[in-house]
Length: 98
Picture: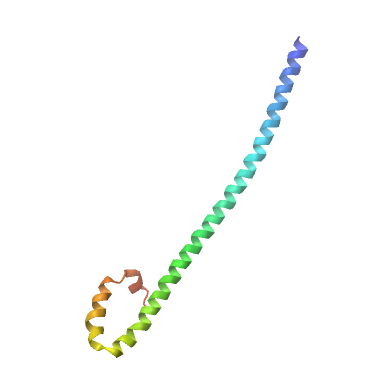
């Protein structure tokens, strides 16, 4: 009877060890996947930030490029309407004076 119980305990221990090893392998795979996902997420965030900065620079450059032709076309427009419009222009655009 003691031999049977010892075999039963050894068999359960072996199954537990195999299950633990499988869980350890799966945890390792999940950890690698999480690390890769984090790197991809950081790369996506960097790309979005670059796009936002590029858009601000482009729109500021366009704004600056349009000021001179408008000023030449109508000095009164430049002194009154565009300066009023300047009040509504987002600060990011005014801050990026190219």
